[in-house]
Image 1 (cartoon, rainbow, N blue to C red):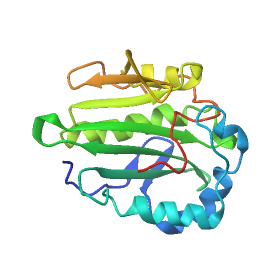
Image 2 (image 1 turned 120 degrees about the vertical axis):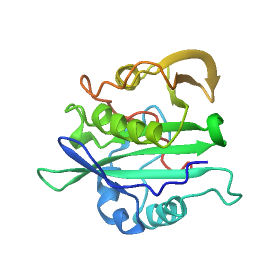
Image 3 (image 1 turned 180 degrees about the horizontal axis):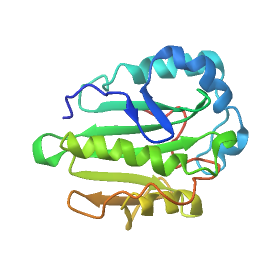
Image 4 (image 1 turned 45 degrees about the vertical axis):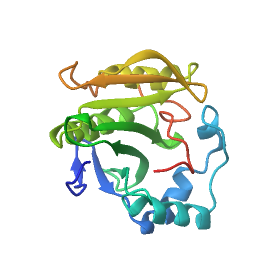
Length: 196
């Protein structure tokens, strides 16, 4: 199990802040566009629902302790505005540690490469912390999120989970490439309301 505390991660254009409940106030606007839920389903959260969800996620672990929940709010360094989030659910011990990752970029920040840049920073930290396998679930019609996954070094598998294709990369595989296309509406298959 990943044991290192989640640090603030900094990229050229973004700061990734470990999630706290206080982020809900600004994130309710970022997550407010119904277009974000085209591939994942659901509706924009209310402020109260988001506070409840963030309190659960900020605990950092599943109730049974079998999963480590890591969520970072993406903040544009130039403007200070929240732009979305990246997240990882880490399971396993020792060499068997794996992370299920996701990203979601608000519609106002899409098209600038935020998903690839910030997810690459998260994957770099996970790798340094000993995670060997990284997985993402992406809707088969979500071309923008597939492009982000490719830039991160993930490849599609034949495994389908809840109608989404599992993408995967193992340690020693291709390096994450944060350049390129941005994730479109739906962000990268983060399912709002689903843990972490």
